[in-house]
Length: 266
Image 1 (cartoon, helix red, strand yellow):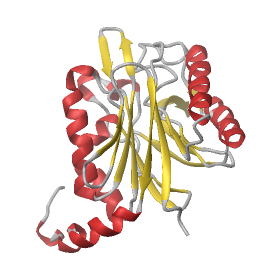
Image 2 (cartoon, rainbow, N blue to C red; image 1 turned 180 degrees about the horizontal axis):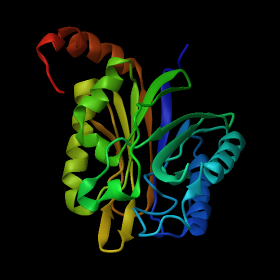
Image 3 (cartoon, rainbow, N blue to C red; image 1 turned 180 degrees about the vertical axis):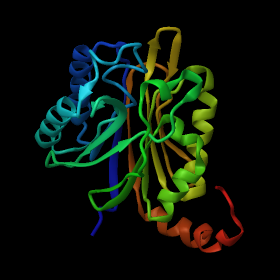
């Protein structure tokens, strides 16, 4: 049977643009510190290994996730914790991808996801190839999914995941400070409309002229914020009580009341 609750810790990390060695060491230290609180899941933000994103990714990107898998398989096993390892700039088959890797408590890599929607205002599509598949997985018996940053602006993506059964959505991002209101509003909306928990892990600090807004949050299916970060580097934690899912899904049954024959989002 799935665990009735999970403790989630979101590591709101400040990274150095293009400095993979520093970022790996810093991420490991932050995950170890978060692990002292004995969470069930630790989450990192988007492209924490490089920042978003250096002009030349080649010297600092991971290679087929090798360094990410080695580091977080070891940490997950040692700390007995599930890790949603944010996303990394990852080179595979001569192309760069914005990739999230997920590890269970045994250190086994159980899922990976390439960001589907490139953030064209910053010409992300010129640096990263786009993914072509959704990502669902199970952590401690709970149905989970993950999306990356700009993906949050596409509700049809999250709804497609939710229709397959979703208790918890992870959103890993490097969302700029000047649009922090959008990040908070969209995260709350995705949680409410899909009747699920949402764990948002955003970055903070600056990369070039862009300042990232922090504001990492854990949100329940009613849209209530269970934990909220400020703008600086910190780790937030919250307990998720999945028993509330039965209540909300029975009292306001949006999935039963849908009329998909009338919808056209193509």
